[in-house]
Image (cartoon, rainbow, N blue to C red; front, side, top):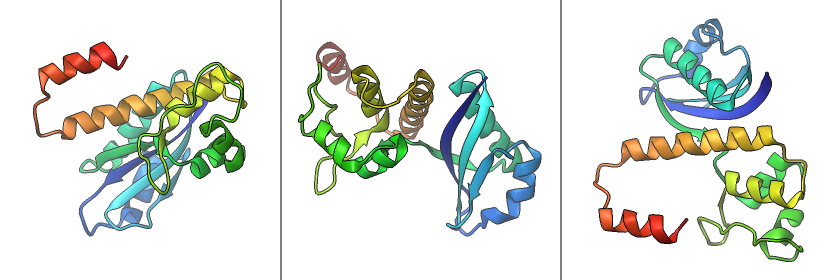
Length: 181
């Protein structure tokens, strides 16, 4: 059994205070989470859950929350998308260290992942950066860390796909599969 750390965020009714569900959440097995109830209409749960797989850990946490709050809607899981400061905190290093890697100032066999949002502050998929760090043996990233970040990434992609109200263009999908892999 491994311990997996992740966050899941749910929306509630617009003016609903999540604090009223704390006892029910504890009773359904969320005693391994810190509940964030500060924003009305939302519940954020930071878990450290023991399980045989990351998928099972996240799935059981989602099921426990929806058992306690049947109308709760899953919004996202984290960490998913982050800037260098957030990832430095997550990976236990300095922002300067990650900035050096992002600028290509470190000898490595492959380039640092491309940011998904570029601007005053750039953002990356946490999974992409963790995999790069793991392959480069730059920080103490473990298989367990990659496993949970992969499960989080897959869950968020699935959430995004369920929210799409439009059809994908098959020509673009075919093109992307051919040239983006």
